[in-house]
Image (cartoon, rainbow, N blue to C red; front, side, top):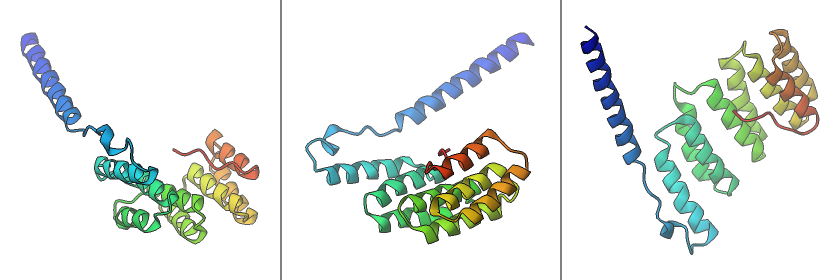
Length: 178
């Protein structure tokens, strides 16, 4: 009986190791000629294409790539990446929070506010997320809405993260990214 268990464990370990090896082997190697000697825009564009290929259709990874496009002035490319993520039935509150943070960062308050509304709708009892959203309202100058959300957040039992998000917003510090 023990030999059988040991044999099974060895086989499973070998299979797991092989799977990890295969996964690691599939990662592309970025050759220096992709970015060396290129203009900053050319290097960034080439590396962003590599990053897009590495997202694996992950939502936060895709939003991270969209962020670089947006901040580099390529809003249309960013939106093309964000649209499928946010229109997916699988889009969760954390996806909407990341998108709202991005929109806030690029000065698109109407889009940020709409994204934050989705966060509140999807996670109505999550105090930390309410505090994060409240912090963005405070940073945007809507202290009344911010303090309403802080009160709802703290009423659910205050966490250090919620208190920190609220505190930071009063002195211009956005919530920590997760």
